[in-house]
Amino acid sequence: MPSDHTRTPDTALAPSFAAGLHQLVDTGRIPGAVVLVHRHGRTLAHLAVGQQVPTGVQGSAGVPMQADSLFRIYSMTKPIVSLAVLQCMEQGRLQLSDPVARHLPSFAHATVWDSARNAPRPAQRSATVYDLLRHTAGLSYAWDTGPVADLYRAARVGSRRQTNTELVTALGPLPLLHEPGTTWEYSRATDVLGALLEHLDNAPLGEVLARRVLRPLGMRDTGFAVPPAQAHRLAEPFAHDPDTGQPVQLIDVLRPAPFESGGGGLVSTAADYARFTQMLLAGGTLDGQRLIGAHTLAFMTANHIQGLPVTGDILAPGHGFGLGVSVRRAHGGCPWPGSPGQYGWSGLGGTHFLVDPALGLGAILLTQAPGQLRFLGEWFAALVYGAIDA
Image (cartoon, rainbow, N blue to C red; front, side, top):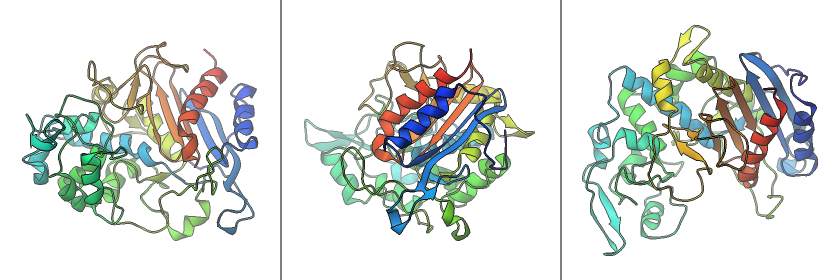
């Protein structure tokens, strides 16, 4: 794996790979992108195409994309935070069966919204750390409408002006959408895990992740804010979505915010995130740095929601969910290629990564095109699997 952020020739992949990437830019679906694909420890492609800052955005005449451009990776933060929580488990500092309230008292006396009564009722059991990791804690993202979503908005849950401590203080007393352990609902759960890590390590989440994951892996460009000296490397979206025409606005990462979101706040580069995926493929160790045990990593990337109902359409067809990552169940059952046991996740800004242990493969796509997120996931998998040898 290269660690110097230099561009690597794309001759190791089928020509269709680079051509497909350029076509996506040329047709105006995305302003630009950086892609990095590695297999068996060898970088097959590290490509930068299109514009880092589109023409006309922020008065720019157009800034070319660079291999080391910085991207808001949003929910690709979740696997990093989840791994840090599992490190705490390995150290005996918590058990996944621990009630969340044991560590964060605001989650004591949990209630569940009862739609028949139009009022909350006591929960049958407490949500656990395990529930947070696999998104079965009964929490929500409040993307929908209804009484619970209204309560989230009234409490300003997820405001970047709140600290993690303020987030869980506001969120803990609110009613759950589901009984803990009964339903997969994508949610603020990983933000709560961020607050849990701050509690356990008595430090801000950025410091916790730097010490536990980022510095050991040499992910020197990854953090919750972009330093002023590196602001010129930040990628930006089109001013308006090319399909809907609606304005596009992403989080401001040029100034540190009180909220260091464990669920979606990190900025990173393709080369940095490839260090993370290479460690995953290597069984938890990279360049002599052991971050997590191989058996714990296998546990993390197993399907933990067998038989549970899944709400919404965030989780792709044919996939289960592990502890911070989606997990493909079979070759079939999904409208794009992949191997059983392949895992990964995406980010709201248009970022994706996948790890395929059966093929020794890791692939990262970074762009800033939130309206293209669903399209890009299917497109990227088809492009990657179509470009590699057996």
